Length: 119
Image (cartoon, rainbow, N blue to C red):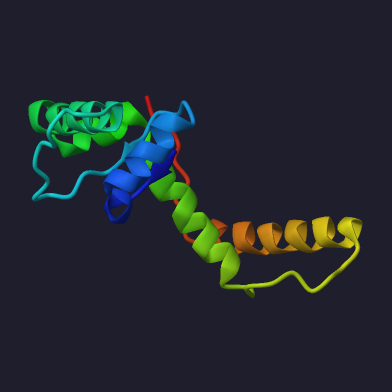
């Protein structure tokens, strides 16, 4: 599961461990070690120790957290075309999403630099 610091709670960590998942939750900057009385606390403390040892940026890259950030930004762009899908038919819903993605790609293509290798 990938989420942000708002989900850095005992309840969330326990639910993830109970379901057999691995939490990739960004620990708050002022986060402290929890008493290791449960598996969720051990998992969270390992994340906190790794963050302190390797740095926040390295932990984000190593854990795949940065991918979440990129996906979330793209979903925000997609939602800017409207929160809901207007069609009721699944085929038309698919077409509507494809149109939104094509528009989003066209808008972002104008601001994307093109690189040429010169050697």
